[in-house]
Length: 259
Image (cartoon, rainbow, N blue to C red):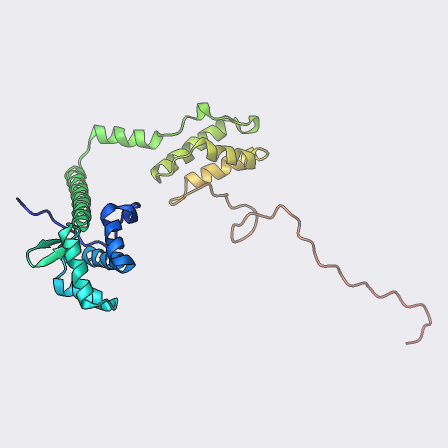
């Protein structure tokens, strides 16, 4: 039987009822918390190891690092092997649950790699098809381009305020919607409701901003058309700027007064 591929884990995976399992309860009953903690450390070491395997010498060193008595460590290892909580694979040690987790991760990785490979193959095929058709006139391609340019939301289902329900605004909205469709940012009714609240009293300005934004090369939302005499093209403020108060003028001197 072909051995399944295993992938090293970055995290230890334990069931939520792990402390309540019969074998864990027997281990704790015989060796106390030290036995359970040692078994947990072994599983973590196997989880990050290649093929979920560690050597018996490493298993003993893990016990030494926890300051366990070497004889007690060997007894716990024997207990774990007798109850199939650990298994021997040649000269190495492993744990059945860790093996299952590493094999499951390997399957997930293989599926992800296969999906990426297929995606790259599809993208490569599309590029080849585009290269073969570039420069060749095609009625179908021209029709598709025309359809792409005229794609727009269903404005008939949108709630237009009376002040914004004009032929000019609808035409400008179609132009801007086609522009946003090309930018892969299609308009929706929520966006229009927000714009309607903002421009309900300024329909002409709304129409001009739509036409201006549709003519820009790069646009991600509605841009206000520059207005006023500002050389930078910024829109004049709606609020008047208050000039600082002038200092009071000196009263006129009386005739014949001395300095």
